[in-house]
Amino acid sequence: MTAPLLSLRGISKSYGQVHANQAVDLDVAPQSIHAILGENGAGKSTLMKMIYGVEQPDSGSVAWEGEPLALASPAEARAKGIGMVFQHFSLFETLTVVENIQLVVPGKKADLVKRVRALGQEFGLEVDPLAHVHALSVGERQRVEIIRCLMTSPRLLILDEPTSVLPPQLVEKLFETLRRLRDGGVSILFISHKLEEIRAICDRATILRGGRVTGHIDPREHDAHDLARMMIGRDMPEPMAAVPLSGGEKRLEIIGLHHRPEDPFAVPLSDIALTVRSGEILGIAGISGNGQSELASLISGEIVLPRDQRDRIYMMGRDVGRLDAAHRRQLGFAFVPEDRLGRGAIPEMSLVLNGLLTAHPLNLLRHGLIDRTRASAFTEDCIRQYDVRTPGPDAEAGALSGGNLQKFIVGREIMLAPKLLFVAQPTWGVDVGAASAIRARLVALRNEGMAILVISEELEELFELCDFIQVLHHGALSPPLVTKETRPEEIGRYMIGAQDASKKVIA
Picture 1 (cartoon, one colour):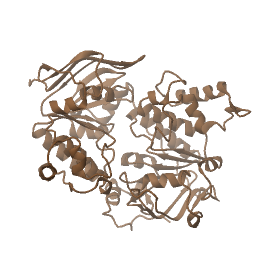
Picture 2 (cartoon, one colour):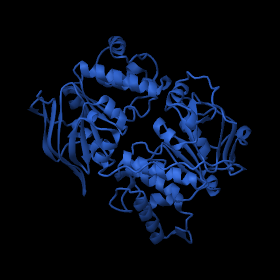
Picture 3 (tube, helix red, strand yellow):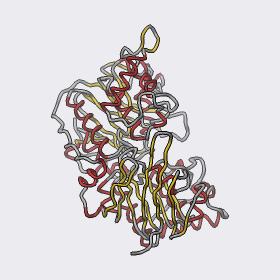
Picture 4 (spheres, rainbow, N blue to C red):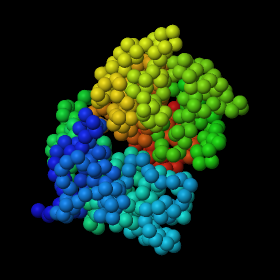
């Protein structure tokens, strides 16, 4: 057996009464792609932060090539040969590629430009080093993050959900790059909720549950169902079948919407047209940064349309161009934003108070004051129904893991019983068990007659949920495609602008 590159023994980390990691043992072999599997709150992110020097363990030991290792910062980790690409990119959009790289990698600009181009050719990560980041696609931005890591000469590369923003064509290209890195001597720690991808790319996997290691396996020897059961400790429920419905009333209609944002780096929208009826789910696919956030802000009412565009958006048959977010909610509209912290919840406030942000019309106020008993009961009901892992309703939203906070926000909006539900990235960062439960609930609501609009970068999710799919590319929407008559590769071509929008159009 080859000696491990990285060894963890008895690593534990607690935050107050929450035990994020408990006596974790992990060996990362040289030239391996090693998956870390686990539910939300299983301790994956905390473990990676300790390996990268962002956090320090309370107890246990770390060894690098058999020698004791203690990291006080990410800079020390990079100096040792450990790099990390986070799920949410850490690039300055107004700087060029090479200027972003200069923030981490020393050297003259001309020399760094040559190194960027050389690495791009060697590993299939081509990107213009002189381009401004705001002008790059998401796939190109991810290449910049990986190149920046490679320029620190890592021997261990940590990737957190690296495929969450990529269409199918670019996922395989990324995997080719990772295999070449592995064959060139780099070990990779790979975090993903996409179990089929783990089976395709990883040769080892460690499973975490409740902060503890429950197994070390070769994922290639197990199917996705087995991996999911090992992660969550129970069998996955069967997906709920969608009941065919037709002729529902229009709950959302957008007609020829044009929008040029004030932000010079935002994406203009052109001739947007879509319809969502009661009893159906419409999905919006697309690579991040193609106008999703701008479209979401216009539909939610966070941005009010200019006077000449105010007859472009209708909800429940009413022109809502002049209505703000609160008045749209009064019509029966509910919204789960992509940004959990800041738009979906306020991190410093308790779950009870975060529930009140949108649920206060449900008799949670009395004479203009908070009815604490009813507000707490509402929050506890949401926690119970949506399996939110939290000490209780008075816990601060910012103390929850991203996946558990997502479950709370989705649950809060569903409990409003809206006529029209708009969910952006419904299961982003949510583990496979919770994601399955959220999707099943959305399908059940659709079967009960709710109109649902979903924006997601997870193609598998859209194909599981949606009756129709439209693709957003450079601020323009494709025609609606019948999901059951469309293949993921077709959607992928729309996503990268290579598909003529002329097939499978419905009336």
